[in-house]
Each structure stands twice: as structure tokens, then as C-alpha cells.
View 1 (cartoon, helix red, strand yellow):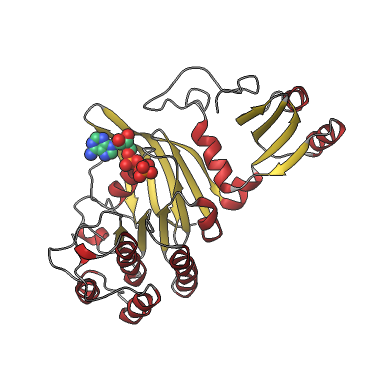
View 2: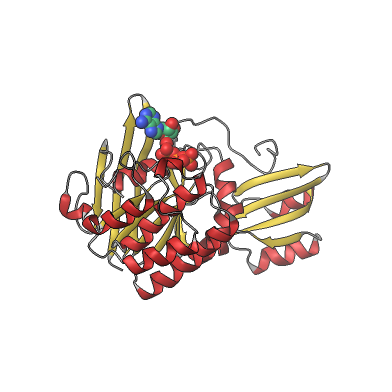
Length: 319
Ligand SMILES: Nc1ncnc2c1ncn2[C@@H]1O[C@H](COP(=O)(O)OP(=O)(O)OP(=O)(O)O)[C@@H](O)[C@H]1O
């Protein structure tokens, strides 16, 4: 697999705040990868550094083979779409679509026009008068029609209604099949976007806690519910990511595969075994204490979560 993005030992400090600590991952060319995690986990920081908008504190980053910061050759092949994208004063959406080809050599004006129509985007309204969702549509259109070899979407659809989000998922997938490229996307609407993602990287408190194909991630955990004592017995020695208790009942999310031995034990004890959704898995990692995960995060609390601890519940204005 040729990597489009390679990150090793990435650290980022904002004064005394440690936003990223020793983050490493690799994203293959022509992959749609989700960058997931709770608020403040470090996703925007990673994306800003990858797109050359922020300097790193230390570490090694390669985007399409080059270090992105202040590197015009690398930035030419990159489109970063973020929620608070700035546009020149008095710009209308039509101006954005008209000027984008200056910055993106693969720009597809026809696709941009089709998307504007599908999103019902008023092209002649000043950008600053657009609704929250319409503003997201502008950013999404730029990200998709840029056809940049590396496209980074940071929570692209704030304010977008369900129909528009459906259009985004469908059109992105269709366009990606016809024009494969590397897409990195952060989102909190994980279950909605899950079908789009091939690979997933989960960040928590500035460190990486999961990095795998979506298929492996889903197969790599399961839920078990039933009487608390039986659940504790069957999961003994396994890493429990999340616990919920109600009276004498307990439901846990467990890391690892539910092998034949565990399945028969669970059946003997009358426990219910279930699959875990990507959203549940990411939430579970986000509830883990960083001390338990073995990775010191910036806000680490003490004490591991165990089954007996149920309380642990485009470039900046066109550059
Ligand atoms: N310019 C800055 N100065 C100081 N701290 C910052 C700055 N930018 C980010 N941070 C801190 O770095 C950490 C990571 O922030 P980041 O924006 O990357 O999180 P995120 O995962 O994108 O969150 P969200 O899902 O809420 O967008 C947070 O603790 C944040 O407060």
C-alpha cells in the first residue's frame, strides 16, 4: 500500500496545552479514512498540521511524499475544508465557484454546478448572509469539485439537513469511485458516515487509540449483557471498554473477538452477545481513562476502568 499521508511521532503544544502526543499513522492512497474522537481530542489540530495551516511542535509528516508546511508543491495537491472557512468580504457562492479553478487544477465546474443545484445553494446571496447549512454546502462543493489528490473534510456538514447529508454521502462515494483519491474526514455523525469509511483512526486526549479498517474495528469488539455477576465472570481477563449498570444488570463493550469459548460461556450463563457499531466503539474509547489505555493523555485521570468500576461511564480563504 502506498501511503498518501504518513505521520510519525507527531506532537503539538499550544503554549502549555499538549494537544497531540506522539501520534503516528499512515493512510493509503485512494482511501476514505475517518478521523474520529470526542470534542477536543485533537482532530482539527491533526488536519490543520497535515494541510500546512499549523506548524507541528515535533514529529515527521509526509503528505504525498512531502512535508506540507510552507511547501507549495505539496499544498497544490491538497484541499482542506473546514467549518469556519473564511472567504473574502462580499464574496458570493458564485464567486467561490468561479475562482476555485485558480487554486485546484482538477476542478470540475460541472460537478460544482450539479452539487449547487442538488444542495439548492443560492449562488447570488453574499456568503455572510448564507444559513449555517448553506455555508456547509459551499465548503462541501469546494472539497468535492476540487478533486484534490488529498482532500480533508473537518466536520463538513454542520447545519446540513438529513436530505443534504444523504446527497453528500451518495455523491462523494459516486465521485470517489470514478475519481479515486485520498479523503480524510472528521465527523461526529459516525453511524451515518460509517458506510462511506474504509479506514478509521480514533484520537482521544491527543493520542491515537484505534487505527484499523472499519471492518476490523467492528469485528474487534462486542457487547455482552445480562446479570452483573455473570457478565463479570465471562469477561474476566478481557479489556472492557465501557460498562453500564442498572440494578443487578450490566452491559459491557469488550475489546477483542467473541471466540467460540466465550460464546458458549455466554450462552451457558444466558448472556446476550451483540455486535458493536462504529459509533458505540468510538464512544467507548472516548470514555476510557487514558491511564487504562496505557497512553498518557493531556488530561489523564487516575484509575483504570474495569468491570467492577461501573461508574466510569481549502486552504485558508484560498490560502
Ligand atoms: N490555538 C489554540 N490554542 C490553545 N489550545 C488549542 C488551540 N487549538 C486547539 N487547542 C486545544 O487543543 C486540543 C485539541 O483541539 P482540536 O480543535 O484539535 O480538537 P477536535 O478533536 O478537533 O475537537 P472538536 O471535535 O470539538 O472539533 C483542545 O484541548 C483544544 O482546546
